[in-house]
Length: 120
Image (tube, rainbow, N blue to C red; front, side, top):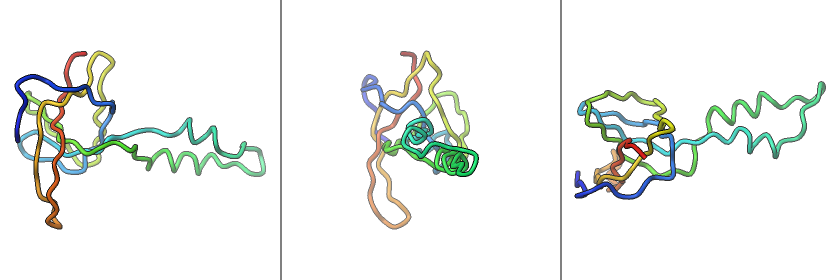
């Protein structure tokens, strides 16, 4: 882990979904989004004979945004778990505080931003 001297940019994502958690209170996560209303706008109108709302709900439940992978860091030692959604409260945002390099199980080297929830 390499940390910046001062916090960097505010990340565009407001929520992340954990895909790997670590014992030190950090977690690798993907940017997470909800396309429910956007998808509903482009779906065929539901009627009594052809109701597609179950399809919309399924897509909403599995949708991942185009967000980047990050390492979520916290100073208070909170533990994270796989598939947990971590969202920024209205008065906070995720800010980049460094860079994390790691190898995937397949041997690929990855470099991701380290982010932390901070006051706006």
